Image 1 (cartoon, helix red, strand yellow):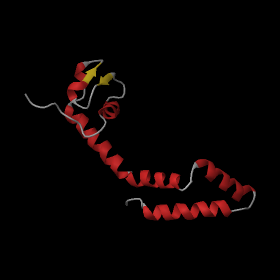
Image 2: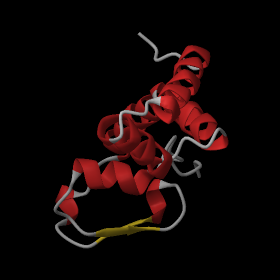
Image 3: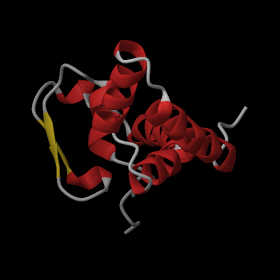
Image 4: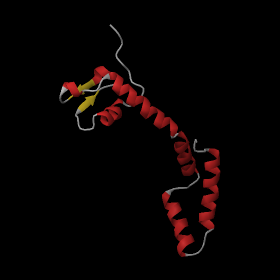
Length: 117
């Protein structure tokens, strides 16, 4: 007996992308763990699911720079509240001190974690 198909990414997300209007549940990360709640002829094949998993994995990997930037922003105190205050001070109070400091940090982080071209 062959091993069940194990997928390379989140199969629930892949199935929702492929068949957004169909009901199912998933136990584990294999094709045999999918319980289909509708017309069985509409159940995606393992190949369809793996193709979508590969696309999702590539998309996830392509955004690694963004996750790295976010962690670094948070570590350096660049959170939404700080940016709102800095922007308010710059626009409403003509004091760009905080905004300039945040932008300097952002620029360095963007240099350290460049967006792939």
